[in-house]
Image (cartoon, rainbow, N blue to C red):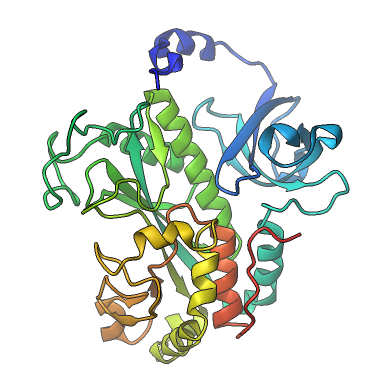
Length: 373
């Protein structure tokens, strides 16, 4: 693929125009998940005043035929604002607006998994469910090659890259730093970041977030990362196994706790939840990536710090298990557990919903949640 022309445009020239006063008008960028269930789309409208709450934002529409969400003969779909953030690219008073998608008949779009997730979260609000998701990703050049890798070969084997420092160990830190600051500006609950085991692979953590906020904040953090990479002429990939062979894959490890788990004696509640998860392992595997487990099959091999896709396991400070309990939690006998199975391209609404369904509502059914009406 040829180098993108946008990577060659002058950002300094653009800044000259962004520095112009915009009067009292506000630019609101509406963002939504498209028909793939993985990619994000966006478009901008002008508002007369700065919105103070989500209720100040009007509904909008778009042509779903161009986003794999409808037929051209009946294309209009609705954008329903559900979360608002500061815009780190255009800056205040402009906004990023995360939206749910409804079809022409006002029914939920197939890839809009937020609505059901929100209903489930409202059922267990007294449990105060907290989530923290660790989003791994890989930086790629426009040619699809991992950023910084030799054009005709491979870098040195894994070993010096995890949390590494130095130009020969940390590939693309400028993007990571820009993304981190942009998330803080936007109001995303970003908790940290680090270089991962494979060179050009990184991770950021979002949380703790309660209930539905987890999915909202992670999707916006992903959007901001895409936009930052766009400015640098780089592509971000959430593929669970971007490079075959002896290289780590990319996951989205999900930390989960409830109020009883965080209180004294909470380890008992953690162990009860893990027992329930073990009985529903295959179901969770199908939910934990948008392709019903086929993407994760390439990653969850039992090697490269992963569990085996076909076996459920749990342990303390063990990165090769399905569920990991940190040593600190085991010592203090309260806290949270980490589900290491979700893929990097998972839908956080689906992941958090199924954790609640299994661990708190104690459901045992085996029907996939993904892409239902």
